Image (cartoon, rainbow, N blue to C red; front, side, top):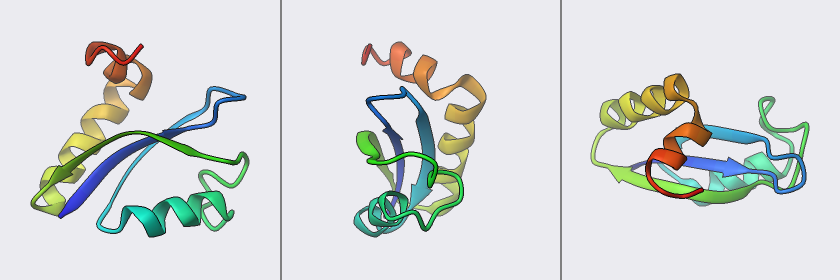
Length: 80
């Protein structure tokens, strides 16, 4: 299984979208400063996740979210 996820920082409203096969490890890496894209702020909090059976499906959704914008994507789903 591959997971597309959206994380954010409550204090600065930064949002990050990604995909992984091990969500727990990926969140640990984001919150430990190992990821260049998210080391500028912590702690990152998981706000959305969806599972796909293949990496290619997960990458398609990840790109769709990034093109749309994660906040607008979540608004379309009724999160905000």
